[in-house]
Image (cartoon, rainbow, N blue to C red; front, side, top):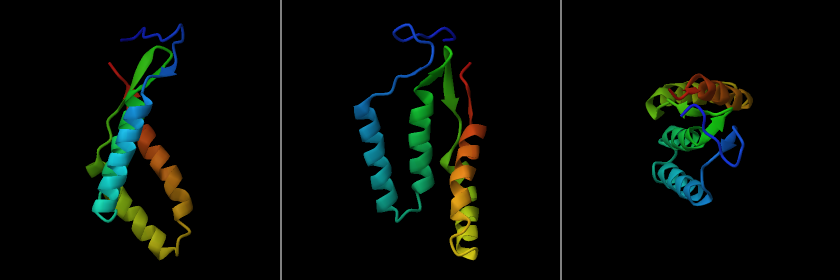
Length: 108
């Protein structure tokens, strides 16, 4: 839908609080129960929910990232954090934002 509108606005977020709470709890449970191994899955699940519920200037956003695609980067970043005694952790946030942007498009 290229001309989506909500209350006269063309840019909006249409996700709900209960959905957010549910996805967050599921992400935390998956991360804790797998001792952090599935954290990339939890991230992609929550990123996907946020981005897929975002409309910018009437165009819905769509997230295409996968946990598998993030997992390789996650291992590399973790190793760099260990090698640099934690210094690289400052860059991980930026790397995650870049990865998220590369995996976000406008829906057709």
